[in-house]
Image 1 (cartoon, rainbow, N blue to C red):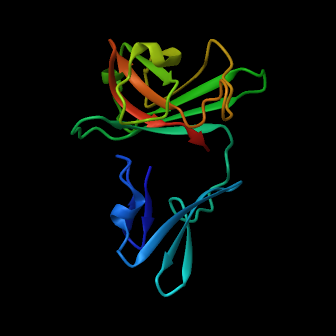
Image 2 (image 1 turned 120 degrees about the horizontal axis):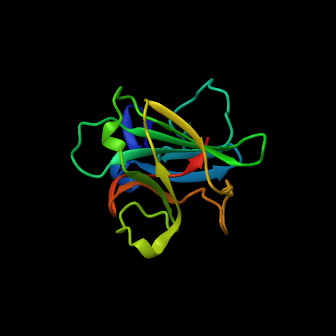
Length: 180
């Protein structure tokens, strides 16, 4: 995830502190509310400017969850999107999107939701909350999961948890699940 503050990244995917990207005369403050995460940047001149994560958007709220899966290494492959939502039959559907026309590099992969939400931590197999096979044949694949997921926070909820694209116990890409 990243948020841009006057063209400067104030949160990076690699979880650098917000203050690492803010000028020294600004004091970053993170505020949470029902509309999502907002950032209030206060300067020493006692003025405060509020920024909404990833800017203002006229995009309608789609519901469900979203995770952007980023490569762990120096990869030229684009980011992948993973969305979860409850359908009319009360099952959970997953939609996996790739901008590449051929998704053959995703063969034999699994979607793994880990119990933690720390992108810097190793991914031991004991911390797996859910795992589902992924069979990509097109740029976008939508399928029902074998069990219903709790799309909330806490307990068995998936919000804030790390999700990875895994092949043979190796995490290829990962991200954090958030509200869509």
